[in-house]
Length: 313
Figure 1 (cartoon, rainbow, N blue to C red):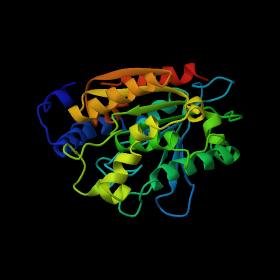
Figure 2: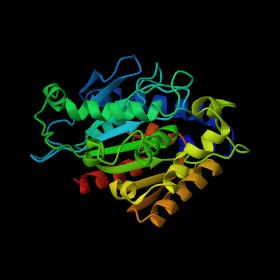
Figure 3: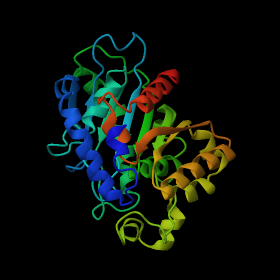
């Protein structure tokens, strides 16, 4: 993709973020009416302004008479920033993702969650858990807002997370203190789709803002103890049995430290006997996969994800 290829040699991840946003914002703007034609509604799942979620509804003729899969997407932002709705001219980001998957017959849910410094470990995973729990407990309210009839009896839940969001998703499902083995959320979850996540941390190669991990986890020692790959290493048989199938992603041009994390996650899951499929998002940098959705370029990974989700229902 030209939008990504023009700055592949840039090593500063924050420069890559801004250039990616600028490259795709204009393209998505031309698709605004198409993207915003997909119906959506905001619901409150908790007590604060960080506890809202948006539900994107599949348009007519995109679903069958059977159950409709539900995809939760947890965005990244280095644990310190991120919103399900960005300010103009970047306001179609994540709306495009909700529209993309909804148009493929998948109810798509994008929650906000608490950020550092207000949110400390494991608040972010607790928020995602609570968003899913709210959805499962309020399917009648959700379907009542849909412009077309939907079946949400015994919903099939899928959870996708990108970057810090992938860390949060894997923490949620690897950490029994937040999500016990007998949780109805585990019973409803059919698949996890972590993408480009920091599943472990090396303090000599940290790509986050200085001191953020110590603020999030409490200390360097606590960070190393509670990072997702450490949680997975300690997982007992009951937790491993409770895990759903995985479709894990890495971008072709992710930073090396992120690529190594993604490689290791896939390897460790396979060693533990989990069902894992690992895909490379070709021609993408760390940020571009989600910006590309509904742009007409670089959407192949999204098509793969949608097909995989629908094959599991």
